[in-house]
Image (cartoon, rainbow, N blue to C red; front, side, top):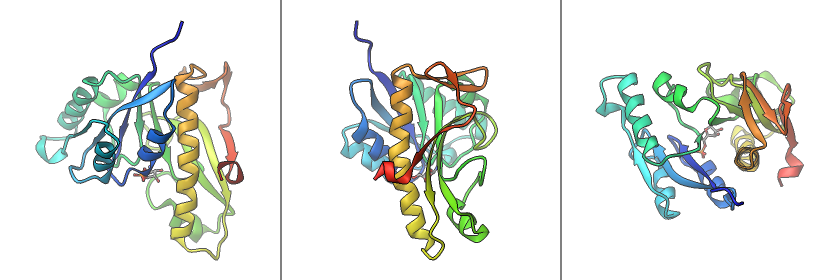
Length: 217
Ligand code: GRF
């Protein structure tokens, strides 16, 4: 018996390059049914329209506070009956109205080798600290910022003489490789969250799967 494809909604505030990579990688096991943003002018929404995927925006300026905005966003999401929600550069902290219903069904991608460098400006911080390795992490979303159970990391060796923008571009390429990978695992029933532990193929992911840059070329 063939199961229905996993319905995925992508949320982002910015340019939407991960959305584009995900849309290109979708296949029989999953497809993107909508893209949502907190910014009416987010290029992500234009990319969605270009791909024939519905977009929606819930602008925080239209709501009394975070809880009201989260509730509106949650209601907008529900209209698309997603099985999985992907954060891809969604720049607002989410509260319980958004987190609770999607516990175990929401992933985020972050541009660092978590737990190193949660938060913003990761490439600059990596270069300033002289780190030898950098990359990106896909993790389940929990209330703690960038701290949920890790699933997969794309890893590269830092070339310190390169500029931050070149490093950022390399990390983005890793992101476009590992995010669809994690979604494939989830959609095929291989990846889940159990008791706050990521499980892949029945085994707890004590450490995330690591994909080297060369494998993403
Ligand atoms: C990515 O670097 C992602 O890791 C971070 O925000 C950025 C989003 O980029 N959370 P894009 O909008 O997908 O191009």
